[in-house]
Image 1: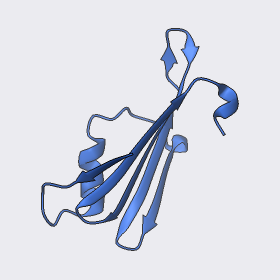
Image 2 (image 1 turned 90 degrees about the vertical axis):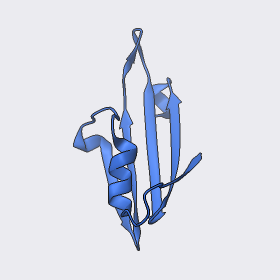
Image 3 (image 1 turned 180 degrees about the vertical axis):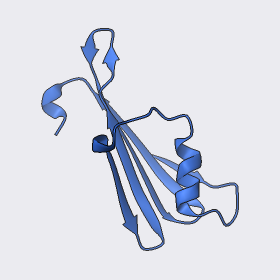
Length: 84
């Protein structure tokens, strides 16, 4: 897990998330989740890129509990049985 601090005071969690996602891989809406929190939000997306002929699964999760702060987690695995 990585904890991030926004360097722009007063930016909303939604706007901070947009900055954090700049350049992130585009994903389909069915592989995206957004949950509103009191004063913040959670966002996750997952991908299944081809890795030299092997299927690989990637999960990216963000929690922005309040303006100015975020936590990010990244997980990856290759076994389709672990996708759930």
